Length: 550
Ligand SMILES: Cc1cc2nc3c(=O)[nH]c(=O)nc-3n(C[C@H](O)[C@H](O)[C@H](O)COP(=O)(O)OP(=O)(O)OC[C@H]3O[C@@H](n4cnc5c(N)ncnc54)[C@H](O)[C@@H]3O)c2cc1C
Image 1: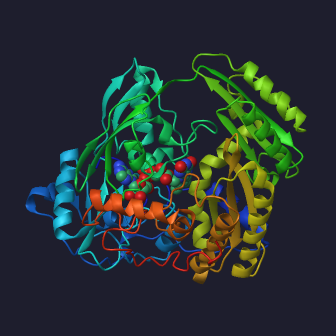
Image 2 (image 1 turned 180 degrees about the vertical axis):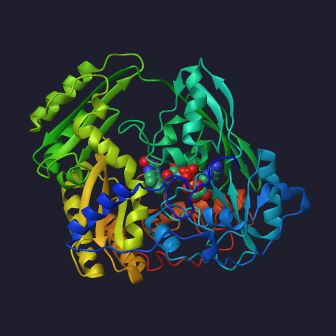
Image 3 (image 1 turned 135 degrees about the horizontal axis):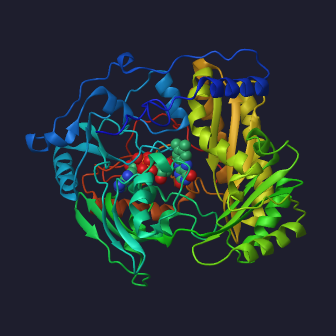
């Protein structure tokens, strides 16, 4: 691998350590927030501090050139990038590393690896960028398997074809965000799918998790951009037809979109593209409170204006990001187009904001979306994933959860979730913390609220404290009628709540699909669908499951 090595214990690459001045500021803000003088911690782990068990399985000689088993590779592929993953890395606690890490170079390699794994009863956990925050890539599969292989798609990273007339491209599943966009740029095209994890996540991972990206409205998930898929399953290969639309039965693409590695390996996809935007119009609008801002978002969406960005941020979250003084909610509004001037659409949206009590100071120019409060919030948003390496080793709990709910239930839902999570923080840690909310995406019939919670834990038991809070949050979301995830996916962490949310017959149908595509049940056991042998996994992260209330 020529790429700079990824940190196995944090976000980014090994050269991207949070600079000392920035770390000091982050810690000072946390100390102020929790009213403590000193937040001491432990240094990041080194590879030498881990004694991983020897790999339990070996591949045949014909596949050996595709496989690694050195400690760095096994650690990078042991966890995703959730708060719990960080805590366990800083605790030097890795009970389920993959035995092997495989880097297939072609769909044929994938098929041969799956064939071997099926015969040897080895669980295969597909791995894109490993940015899962829901335990999606953790090889914790229980005792029914002879071993585990993390199947890293990074070498399937080509753009195979570009169709400029239809504006689509056939791209491989292991392409990371920056390489994908760089490859499309010479054609004047873009996918414009920018999840916060863009730099360290892949096309295949986005499709497998139904990732939510750049567009806050209309095309919120990656789903709508998938034109056709190439999938390798243990039972054989599937290539769906390139079509702009089809009414021929349930969509085969939709079976794999969101299948989280449990039904097949997405080796390539034809993706619908767009022209790079040339016209932009943006404005930050302040509201007296979150609910006044929510009313403006509802009016904008129901008027069919579909802004590319429509991020409503509550007053406290705006303050924390340096984008306000804590008295007003902030709506970051932006329109964009490759073809048409957007000033008129922005003006129409601002009329609706005014009707809902919004006020603003105009920042002119093409870079308006990067200036003022919008710019401050954007910068804080980009740096936030790195700050975890400063906060986690000091017992500070900072995590997020996201959902969606219809407008008619939103106000009550928001109040109830906030109250229950605030209460859970006090119960778990003995002191108050913070719960804030923003909208990441919005629809004519409801928003996708994204909550952030912060608490000061006790380093020795911070994982249990986090579990208690996360379980309360998930209980509250499901009890209030929301979804356990709008775009972060289900993984192993959300599975108990997903099972409550999902109609049981749909669960049975998914298991039947899995039995057809993955008859031995080797693909990502414990995620989305039960293998033919029944539920598996030893995972304790969310073992308690939801309260039996629904
Ligand atoms: C800091 C941070 C910010 C984030 N921001 C966002 C955001 O804005 N929007 C969002 O939606 N999510 C976000 N996430 C979550 C995560 O980035 C997404 O779920 C992303 O789509 C995962 O892509 P990945 O390539 O890293 O996949 P991985 O994490 O490697 O895998 C995710 C799941 O997909 C499966 N999988 C991966 N590749 C394939 C494949 N080729 N075929 C079949 N299955 C596969 C894996 O087995 C696993 O179950 C964020 C995460 C972090 C840490």
